Length: 514
Image 1 (tube, rainbow, N blue to C red):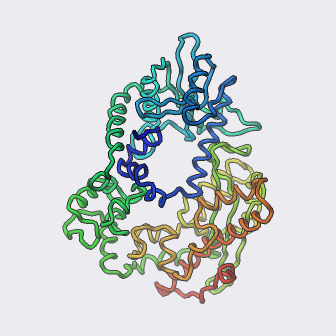
Image 2: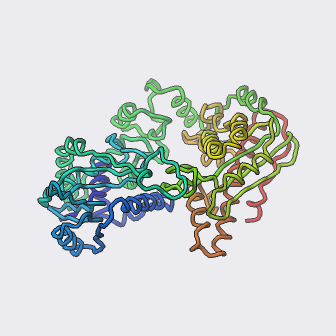
Image 3: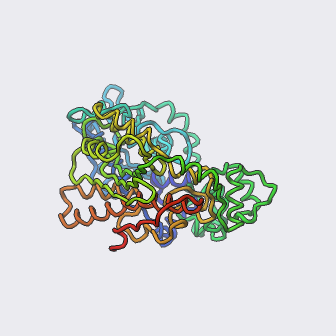
């Protein structure tokens, strides 16, 4: 019999066949492993649970595994332990491990608690994990085990909490009573559990594809390529903001290649442009609009990028859950069209709040006037706003910088420059290799913002050796520096494309040294 855990069940709700493959064909599932950043997200959830345990003094912890965990749970419950961490139950092929099972002496029953590393209760029933379904699965298993249950709670982070001094666990965490919501969902969840058991117990691989074929690319399961080998790497699933109903119509007609979309099929203007560029296999450029936008940018040009880390548990005073620590920035400065490209970089190398140092350096290097160029400027603007709120004496500085921001990405997201190589995306990682193919993140030690955050956290850890710290520091500086140099390179390419006067592009020294 297949043992269905809570994690397995919730994954089944997203894509049954993906789960079947991971159980019965692990050699396929193993090809699609979690990234280091995804692992870190899970670790942060575990960290929130560890802090939540402080809300339950006198608790006992089931540390055994397998059948021993089941027996240890029975012993703790028989002794009426005040709270049990990781109480474990296996009934009818369903396995549940409870974050907290707390005994209610007055009513002689057990209250169930689930800890989530989120800032709010998730109950949308969408692609993300639904906290209510999560608890409903556990309730079903415990009822099968004849456990008398009382109330059900979700413990999550308080998004309004701001650290001041030591952590106030009671203020940091919120308990939501979801007993009625779980009760309302329970019949449907139990029906889904029965379906999961029947489906996942099949010995032979289920025939056909998976429902992910009706979802956009970002919502595909990890084994989508194996399940749907006929779907091209760049397909209708990549159409910009494609509505579910439109995608379903295309899939039902077995239309996956953009070239096969009928001329009369209703698409948005942006989607039509994307399809046309793919068919044309040439860029579509609004020269006048790009020339107008770039011509309006006042010098000096400050190509600017933050790297930030937002821990679930606030580390420093003035921070709340997931508020961003601006541990690094890169700034390339071009003071005039034919000027030299200057570079200023900052990387905080210890576990303390870098905000004051960031403010000092930005005040020194970004003077009034000019243009601060970012890629997806809402990120930089958001970090600036958070620093300004923490440091009232510097609020005016960060408000000024935000007022100077220009988003270079919008030339591409607004489709003033469309290229089939972008594959419908306006991300820097898609645009750069198309416009400046000699530049690449692929061989770098750090290749994206998630890896950068994870690397910095490791760098400032006392457990990391000096040699490892030095390598991480080098990798982070090259990565963040390439982000701002990439903006300069793309800006330079656009200037040449539209005929604006510009000097020869200045190379990026760190990449030349690799």
